[in-house]
Length: 334
Figure 1: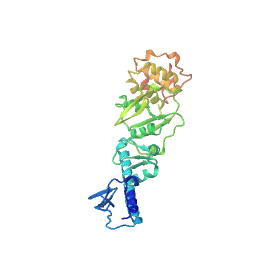
Figure 2: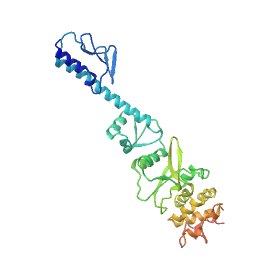
Figure 3: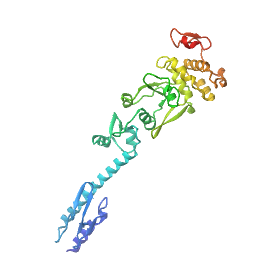
């Protein structure tokens, strides 16, 4: 064999020629490239025994074509392996019970077209436009809230009666269907997939600046499955609950819940009342706390709390409480 041709064959057969390298090539007895005996998997392509073997002096162009053929199968096989590994990483790292948004997936390197392919092949399911879940993975309200808070970084939190129930208050007084209460600052909008999703309970969302400043220690966390969500601490949640009296929260039920708030932190209650923008909420909170004779009430500095002036009608045909100037149900007045 011509030495130039032979040198060229060795050069083409070198693992460095392949990107990524092919390490299963070897030289046969004639000094020509071949695959090792047996078979090797390139992606989904099974190549049995020898891919090529030459027993006579080959044409250099044909040898390069043959080696390029090996390279192509190796390249696409490696690409398939990389794609499979990428899918496996996504599925294995997916937090169970959590919605994943497209914007978050894109930050992880899974762009829209790739996610569409995963969905088309049944590896992902749509929760709504731009939101996905794993097949056979039950996703509830909390998994959606986690996506809003952690992936979309929305300033949304679970509050009001829902937060009180999650902390062990009020779960014994509700007879009718449950409602999940969400709060956020003015101007916050929830994504359409979250609003249109049929969750296990009705969602009541309010974007309001109930407090003049963000009081950080008025929040806590609730552990659910393998993740945590941000919710209101009981002190804040109680005032958020009273925000909905009487439109979406019954007066009697709210009073029974407040009666159980024996261990609130007076320092935090004071701070919240001083920064609360709703006169109605402040008067109701103080009225119910006094009526329940809660032990921390005496520690409040009432002179620092602005309760406004004038009367506030809370319930129609009620009785006016002369201290707090609010109308309350007759049956709870005495």
